[in-house]
Image (cartoon, rainbow over all chains, first blue to last red):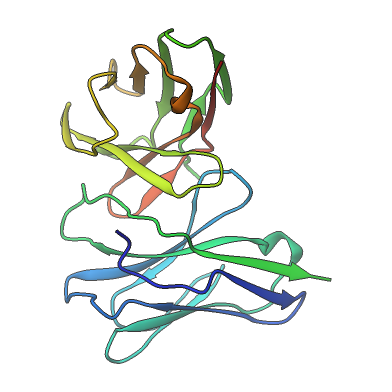
Length: 112
Length: 110
């Protein structure tokens, strides 16, 4: 079973920041937080990952709380093309063969 | 930017037929995976593969399924005798740390 909890759906106005929360209260010290998204039935797209520090790349920012029990993915200026299902996944990166366990994610709807 | 590719994009087959789904992982990656997603359901892990052998498989990956790396670039998933319930999107992924997914093959079993 997925070790994360996410709201099933969220809305965001185009051009505004989308803040997607994730709870992972049982995360262990070796586990990273990964975010992927899936647009329609396309393959999951990697967005960002982190261990304990906040991370930023060209797609998004990841804010992880100090106790690591929750995190927030931030899309700073959402566009209509960001409408997708967003998955928060914890994964032990010590093992390269470690599978990803997907939950049901958050369906983000960006509206004009 | 390197990417995982999959062929075909859509495969239609009759129940009981064999199908082979093909994947070309990112070239310097050594760990490979297959996942599937039945319409409206979660993405589910099927199997992981490293060094020409299966590393882990799920309960879904029964004797009807097999994987192979027939050459230095392709990674295949074979379903020996397809069932109606095998209809799904099948995603290949590869990694050297972060998993990158292909676009998927939609398998329709009639």
